[in-house]
Length: 582
Image (tube, rainbow, N blue to C red; front, side, top):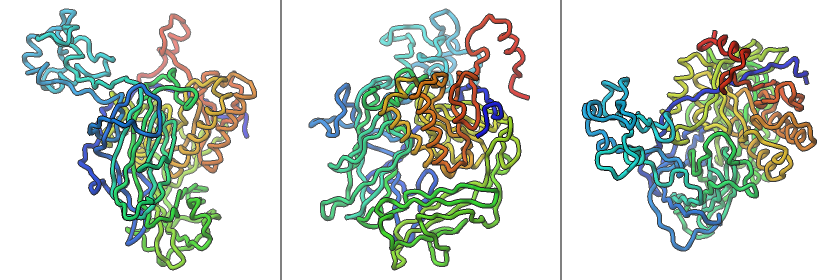
């Protein structure tokens, strides 16, 4: 491995991308869940194979308060409908526009703020009353919206305006405690299934019917096996998820109150339930494509534990196939061996300028030829490496211009349209690179980055972690699990060229525990990505970082003008920064 002097030093540039957040409002019920996955991979079926149920829509919800997190629900629960995905402590505000802003003219002519200035700034003129309302309540101005809009501190004032009166803050906003979510889905009797959660935080206990199946901490996609019901003829399965958004070092130290963004609680991303053809839990757990050149790939096929124990099962594959999963005539493979150095027909490289994508289908069959499972993944042919001070994309030096980005506006639950808008903003200002801060990214966002040719840094949940964390077995166990989940979920995204971890951790500490933590995380991510990602972390220790030998790229954080300064050298440095970039 090269020394740090031969690696590339990156300076972190922080910026906020403004977007609104709305959740899907589909009407749902036991027979009404959507059937197409909102993200890749896809699952084409014929008469058999897995069936997809996207559980985005109306669930039952109850806030249970500041009580111990237990697997069983209390005897008495007061349920109400809510739309999932949902951040129960960070739901969007619902401004009372008609009450507080009966007309744009009245707002402009009659209302002044408590400082005597006009409540509605002149740049809203002509935008209509909805713009005035939403702009006053926008949290882009701060936690109480635009304070110029308010002329009263009393929410009960008849003529006064205040954030509390006008902006419709949800009563659970910023509340910490336990919440319960519950939904029903109808399946064929006697079938096993898989529950896929794109993101559930901070700690989540998952139960199906009366069977406890998962305890998960952290923000990353994860999958849980759901055995077939033991009740003969049962068609409706009940999914219950208990969410604890409180911080607790004993049970989920990967979430900490000192992190520099609001860590919301709830089912934050898509939920899917995949029903299998029968009670047997034989399925394709993963199909991962790792480019070895701009024409050749290795393919790693991971059957489920049950499927791996069945030596009689057959596997077939094909690139860029049409609809469905008719595997007759497809090539054979041995799952435990995968494919090594196979050439992609009609290979077209992926790059920011030409984000070409290919597809691969893999089918799992019974010896009789009956389909058990079929997975279609999308991937891009691109390579990433370093040479001296350069990052090489497809063997050519690339310069990265971009921004840090959070999934967070007034809510961390973003619609597909919000994600598209963020992509368009990044493209419009000339960025070719985006850093997902500071957790595994929404797979919908990465799908869009694949399509639009944006390069991505994705990292494991964490911020300014310390020797106390690195010495904590639970913290390290959970961090490594999150690394596994992130790497597995993002294996086929050509846009993701960096895997990171421990943002601004105490990497200047040379103790054995810190060294072991950095080495373990770097090794795990390098192994899981089969060397197709660059490994790094945001370091504010610069050349005093003791663990750069474990990184492929040195990524040093610098904050010119981020904090007030009177230092002449720093002021001059700021003056030399171009308005955007050259």
